[in-house]
Amino acid sequence: MGYQVTTGGDLSQPGSPAYGREMPESPEDFYARARAAADEHGRLPVPDQAMWEIFPFEHERLVAKPLEAPVLPEPPREGEGDRECGRCAHPDQDVLWSDDRWLLARLPQPLRLPFAAMLMPRAHLDLGDLDDCQAAPISTSSSWPALPG
Image 1 (cartoon, rainbow, N blue to C red):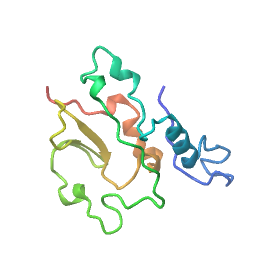
Image 2 (cartoon, rainbow, N blue to C red):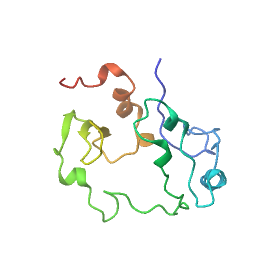
Image 3 (tube, rainbow, N blue to C red):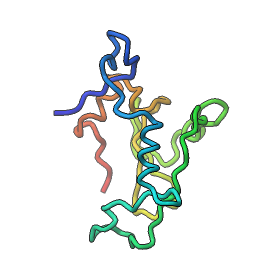
Image 4 (cartoon, rainbow, N blue to C red):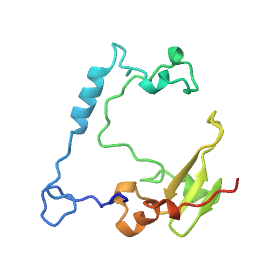
């Protein structure tokens, strides 16, 4: 069984998809909790996965960046305000698959990974802003493209 994707809305407005739901933690509370878990330099500990035998890096040399306080309002992302959207400027660059709503693009190098790609909507939307029709193709694995081997 898949999961239900809903659009955002006013938490206090009856009829809104978000009505009655509580935000589990404010951004300020989340930052305070993360900061409390950080060391004296503001760095979070290396996650437990770094100790796994198959983890590809030496955990002794991994260092997290120091936490930065949230910035409000959030600065414009690529494609917002007067910032150009790289995908709109180069719509076919590194595209492995696409349809009328979605595209799968290889991430630019250097990543130091054998392969990495990003599935993204063609429209300038965050996943939480997709309506049910837009989100339906990513909720079932049968709709995902088969990549050439």
